[in-house]
Length: 596
Image (cartoon, rainbow, N blue to C red; front, side, top):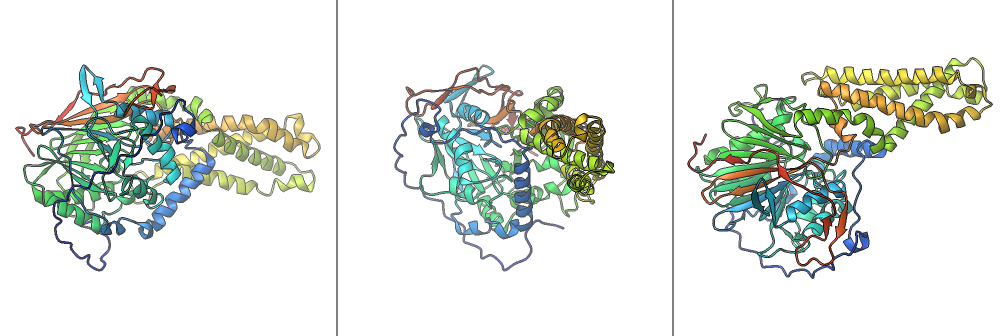
């Protein structure tokens, strides 16, 4: 296994190296939209959305089916091969006087309050942070998962385009900043159809005051002071397709040995490779075969996907995860303190030399992350009423089945509930095991998923048995049928549903100690606070400075600003919305520094 190209097919004809793209004719500015006087969707042009309830039964089923279909049939729906027919421009951002500011945000299209809080901060002309004034980026980079839970035109309109248009409704003085977007797994669930329609269109190629410049789902951008930005599109962590490799090979023809590179990826595979060594193979292949021959230095890898901020530092580069653009906050305490990248266990021949990277910073910090984990007991039922109802129904049906099986008398309708008892037990056990998401048997520590899933199922069945014991000692048990069923639905179901969610919460807390269902522990809570994004500056001397910015508490109260003019945000916060440095600014690869 020495590369990540797709299976051999008919050779793709090599297109001659492109000429330098000519500037596109300036588009006529769209007429200014009337500023809203309230948060009425009719005035805003979109409907502000509630946060996604990630444990909602229908959403779990829908997302699971979409994921399964995307995995099984993704190769047939893969539009990356078709993108070879689209423009293959390599872009240039010249900045001002040899320097440029860039913003990076990822995992953003969720609930309105969190998404708009970050969009509002990104849209402001400048932010005062730590005694410094940081101007708005001339380039906005969206790192993946621009919409939740599933990609669609309506979803992008309500959860992404609408909030960002409200934050920066018109081009600011000095010209429109440029927006580039990289798709994540949630953007991929419809085969990139909606993503390409929004971010790669030729007509009306703007989102509010930001101009969209790309024509494909991946891109290369020449930056000032010998810096480059490469953004690769991996379909669910799979191979990098041939047209994409050819595009980047052509782009790399302009890269010299003294240049430095920022590499954007859809997922922090350097972290995920700690449990699955093959996850980093595609990124390593790209660095070795496309960027390596240029002699340039990849100094920064940046990604979202995990909804927190984490930075690993090593002798050659920084590895940053920053997925705090709007989706629920994910804890950090399960992150490894040290990574070996690429993993020594990789099966790839000719892999790059493995290097050691240490965790330098995380947001939220470990103590805060652990404390937030305990909040699952009070949040899971409140944030996911449908999930609590589903558990209540399962518990009630199981109790009635157990009660019917334990009774030696009763009519035929009552006995009917004894028939599906085995079915209910199998359903509970199967559901809890699948919830634990056991990986393939070839991966290390896969047994813990099975053990924890079975233990969770046993706990839920024990709860049903306890409920049955109590039910048979209540007077409702002997009422004339269907009286017991009515009482069970009205009284028993709400109580047992709440208790069952607490059992599930306890399972999630325990499982997270073994690094199982860590994502579900926080997704079930739907924590909207703790957002993060990056503001980066390339100075004229070539030094890249990364400012990791955190928002401890988002704004949940907004007021329309009908008197604002031009690019001023349509809605302004009615309560405090503060931003701070997560850690001290990170200086990367000044021109006089040693290069590795």
